[in-house]
Image (cartoon, rainbow, N blue to C red; front, side, top):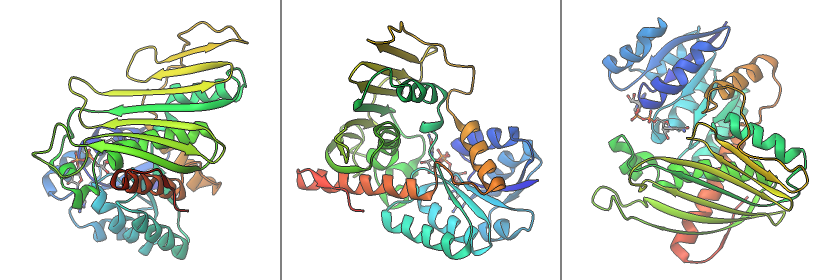
Length: 331
Ligand SMILES: NC(=O)c1ccc[n+]([C@@H]2O[C@H](COP(=O)([O-])OP(=O)(O)OC[C@H]3O[C@@H](n4cnc5c(N)ncnc54)[C@H](O)[C@@H]3O)[C@@H](O)[C@H]2O)c1
C-alpha cells in the first residue's frame, strides 16, 4: 500500500487529485492538510482520511510514503522540504515554485534525502495530446517547426492568485507554465530564448501582476513556440494546442467533445480523430505514472527538473517583459 498525504483541500485537491488518487490500486489517502480543520475534514471525509492543519505532524505520520502538494505556490517549497526531511517522496503541482531558486532548493533537498520529486503538470498526460504525440511520432505530419498553445481563464477563483507574494506572479507563472510545457513536449529541445509581452487589462484593481501574456519561444533546434495565456478571457475558459509540421498539422481543442483534429498531406487523414475514452484532463494518468515510478524506481517523464526548467523559461519571459527585448533562458 502506498500512503499519500494531500496538502491542500481546495478546488484542485478536491476536484482532481483526491478523486484520481482514490482510483489508483494500492493507494491509501492517509491524510489531508489545509489551513482550516473544517475544510480539511470536508476533503478528507469521503476517503476515510485524517484531517490536519499541522503540515509537519501530517508528514511525520509513518503511514505516509508520498506528500502530494496541491496548495498555493508559497506552500510548495516548505511542503516539499518537510517531505524530504521526513524521507517522503513529493508530488508538487504546477508551478513547481515561485522562482527557480525555490525549485533549486527543493531539488537539493530531495537529492540530499534520497527521495523523489515529481512535477504535477497534467498537460503532457492529456489523452488527446498523447494521441497527438503518437501522430507526430509517426512522422506523418513531417518535421515539427512550430508549436502553439492557448491557456486562458476569465478570473482566478481564489484571492491568493492576485497576491504575487503568495502566488509568485500572474498569468505567466500560473497559466503560461502549461503552454510552455506543451511546447517543450512537442518541440523536443530546450527553450533557448523568449520574447514576451504582457499587460493587466481586467484585474488592475486587484493585482500588480499581468493578466494577459503572449510569449514567443525559440527552441535550441530552431522550432518556434507561441504561448497565449491569460486570466482575462471573458466568457469562458480556453485550452487549445497546435503542432505544425512540414506535411501536416494537429489541433487539440481540449474543452470540446471531439478534441483532436489532424491533417496530413501524406496520410490524407480526415479530421476530427477519435480519442480513446479516457479522462480528458490526464490527472489519473499523471498520478498513476508517479505512483508507478515510486514503486518501480524508474525515471519519470515529469520530475522536478522539468518544473525547474519551465520556471527558467518563466523567468526569462518576465525579464523580456521588463526589458522589451528577447532574453536567453538561463541554464
Ligand atoms: N491544471 C492544473 O494543474 C491546476 C489547476 C488549478 C490549480 N492548480 C494549482 O493547484 C494549487 C492549489 O490551487 P487551488 O485552485 O486548489 O486553490 P484553492 O484556493 O482552491 O485551495 C487552496 C488550498 O490550499 C490550502 N492551503 C493554503 N495554505 C496552506 C498551508 N500553509 N498548508 C496547507 N494547506 C494550505 C487551503 O486551505 C486550501 O484548501 C495551486 O498551486 C494552483 O496553481 C493547478
